[in-house]
Image 1 (cartoon, one colour):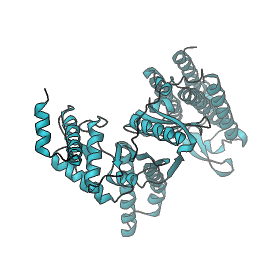
Image 2 (cartoon, chains in turn blue, red):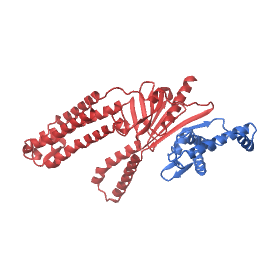
Image 3 (cartoon, helix red, strand yellow):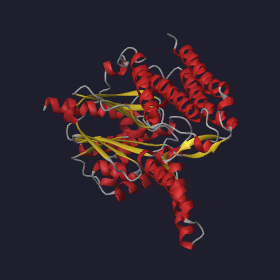
Image 4 (spheres, helix red, strand yellow):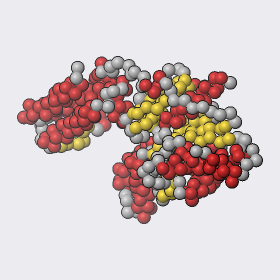
Length: 119
Length: 323
């Protein structure tokens, strides 16, 4: 699982980690049903508290991207298609787009207008 | 030289020795035969003739049939490491099995009773030395051509790192069978401890099963899972659920990395296989991360998502070279 964190990102750490995991799944390296590396390994690799990683994983479970199974660890949820991963990636890209829009002073509605103007 | 034909002919030859030799001199062997010698070469174990022939034949036939089956899959002999393990094992074990049989029969030859069967001292040493020599020679003759580099290595996967970004890759792999063995061994030790506290299990029972359980537990703790991490300036490999032992490889020592499919049949089984400079940490067949050292050596480890890990390793190396 390839995780990238932006060092200049001001968002809370668990949101950044959730975003990184969303991206990693969206890139297609983990298919539905595949098990993620253990949270303690992810935390150790990122040099952060395991609880932060667990919080990010719980957020993603609540989104329906991951599922927790007793004794099986954390795995990618969803049907045996790339639809879930694709959606996760789109959600992640949309979040990033919204962040960027806000930096230029545009809000959510402005962004929706821009999207509607597209053919 | 077709390996399967050679292996079949060699196997039949050894099987003929295993069955034919005891039968040929059956009239001069005691019943039962001495089959085990203790300290000072005094016989301390015996077996009826039929059971002896059956056991020493199976001792050879089972590994031989396994070797033929492994060669039948066709994957085992694709790599030099696999060929060396296969040929060395086949001929080494064949000479070992036949040697045990010959020295046992010679010791029993002409003895009136099994307790009088005398094993001359150098016999076991000669058998082991001959087996090692035969295995080494067969491995050398059967090693074949050096491996061609996989297509992946000619164009190692690359990844673009953006500035101001920290990237790490975490790969993990668990072998459920090995994990199960570990659990069974741990459970067995707990049960044994409880029974001996209560006083049900005697010291003899404990002494019989304790070493096996401890070895199973140790092997399981070392090889049931692995976690590989690339980032910063190291590739770190941690083995087992306890994450020890740890192997840290500085990126400065790595030339490149790529992903490759390898199987236990190619590297000679599960666990840490091969020799330093060409070792594979094999937990399950399939995708492996291969690290090529600047010194020319290689290390492979079976891990999920290896291609992405390799791309990050290469990107980090490129970045370091540029800066």
